Length: 340
Ligand code: SF4
Image: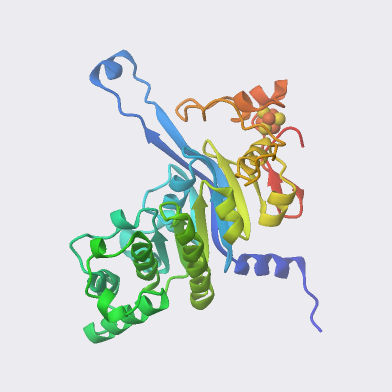
């Protein structure tokens, strides 16, 4: 029997990884008027994502959670290369997407699809549902017109839009919000992708519809063997679907780990506060952790040291001066905080 070496284990780990993000940064230049340009030569930047490193394993649902302005959506857009990073790399199946030409990227785009938050904005109001679904196949020159139609009808059935032949002929405004999001899910799947970025996919749906859409996404994950990056501001939604989660704050990851560990043993005060903010339907329930006071600081000029220090009740002297790095506290569970 062959013995397994450390090298083999490393290879195995890489084989398990679909996406590796290393030190990813995105700075957006702040627009200045003429007077500002004349009075100062220094350009200013919004540091939307500021040195983020993590990986996404094949077949998992990785959650990126944070308030608005935390950089989670920008991170998602960098991963699927809708925008280019200021620094850092995104490896998809071992290939650095940031180094590819537009033509080379086209092949990878087919393997990566997106479900956006607002189904109405992401569907062309003048295009019938059938055409919307067949368009990606046309762009990638896949199948005959008849085969494309059959594929579109098949997917409409799979996402629960029946009868498919009727839905095929409708315009987006003739469907309900939940039905439109099902169309968006079907469109994301029509090219048979490996990876789907779901950016707040149920945030605009009614509460009753949310669970059904999440169940549909999980059914589709099994059927299509998908890997998801699930972006949400809501830890309660993340709990429903994610295998691992990363908590983002002001362009940085504060905590990362398996969902169960982060929920049962949150390490960062910010994670504890997010968990405490999940509503409990009990009028006598008392929160164990206070919600951090104040707003998320300005990403143009983020606080020195730990970015969370202006809102942290446990702030120490070191917190204002030295930036804490993510460190592993227990197997696969990381935190960026000087308390550990
Ligand atoms: Fe609070 Fe300091 Fe930890 Fe930041 S590093 S979360 S300020 S204790």
